[in-house]
Image (cartoon, rainbow, N blue to C red; front, side, top):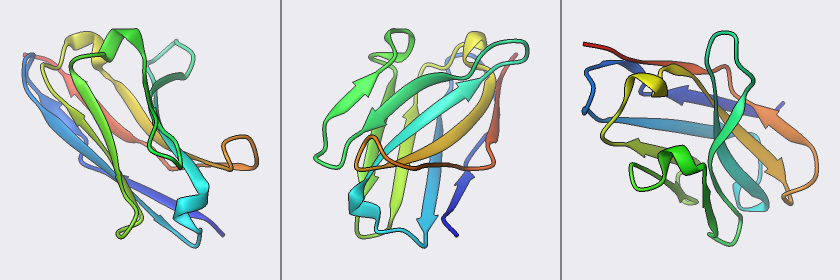
Length: 117
């Protein structure tokens, strides 16, 4: 059973930073495209950022220039560095793994990010 475990969420003031981590286990990590999604109350889940098996990056327009996704294949971990956080970034953030970029996918349990003064 694939496991994706997120950590690093919390409460931060506007303009602050957080770093999310997602540790994957029971998968061959290098075969998966990895991504971060978020879902705010009453809204659909949306893609925040993605890093492919080959290292290509993709960001939602709303986070470009503020968020950075990266992966460490040696540690089976994907990160999301979030800077200059805004209240509208408040959501539950979910880690996603997609085999070969289009195959079976898996989700973490989510971690809450709240941006508020």
